[in-house]
Length: 73
Length: 143
Image 1: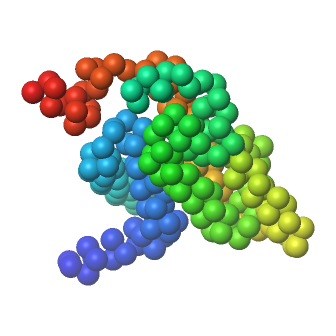
Image 2: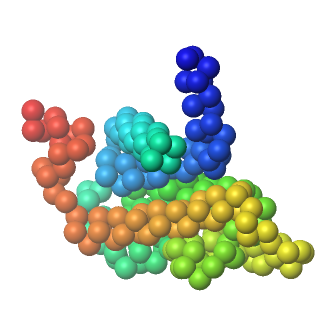
């Protein structure tokens, strides 16, 4: 069972585009967007981290959903 | 005093400067730290895209070029580098890294558009100090 779960996540990242390449882009978008909205460096950093985490988590959930749809439907 | 100096700045000049040099509009408007931050982030993203695409990311296609054009001075200057690399051999359009690099340069262009508009709006419609709810000074006043 654990092997199946492990293979699931390995396939998820192996069969798609190299996702880590998009992380720096996501971080830049978060920083620039938050820097236009907020004024202090502390708030910009915290806002950008929150934005980055939200986008990454959201894309991961979408990836899992698409994978499940393509595999089982 | 700082906001009084800002109101004398021309928003259109900030918009044009922001296109020529990313972050130039904010630098001109008095937000020098943000200007430097935007310059580093946007120019760095264009450069990263060019490196990922092995020098050819700025020649992908017309719609992509429209987005990249918003990147302003650096994007136009680096498009000559792309032109040079494209003459050295066939571009592999199916290469995934080229695709990712092109996305980087296009997103950098859109980000510069956002930054240019931000610089313009901040000078054209300056907020009053008491309206600034998201700054530390605004919070202290409200409290």
